[in-house]
Image 1 (tube, rainbow, N blue to C red):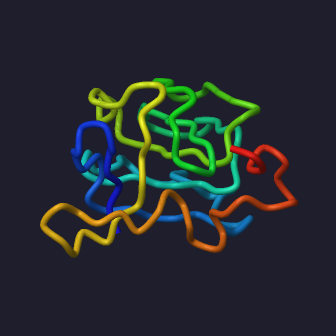
Image 2: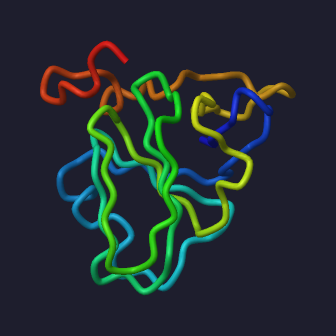
Length: 139
């Protein structure tokens, strides 16, 4: 899976990890020395992140369940950020979000076609709107 910016058609991440369980979201990027600039970590459901105990800065993109970018934040270690209307958070290496703007739609793609067919926004069962996360409904 990869992440694609619908507005530009650019691949914003060639390698995508999905943290959809409580344990994987809690661990996030902790314990890593860095994040590859071509990779991203999707945390869902999620509306807030922190960089406590991290050794490197990251860029954070808050998205709705449809993949629409609500907020983009650069976070050095020992900071936190939130967006109460977000359904998921995508973490990138610092500087990797330069081509992404608020309002863009980011979607997961299987990369199988020349045009990069959209699989969906975040249609994995763990990334769909759920009653357990009201921020995901109606986005």
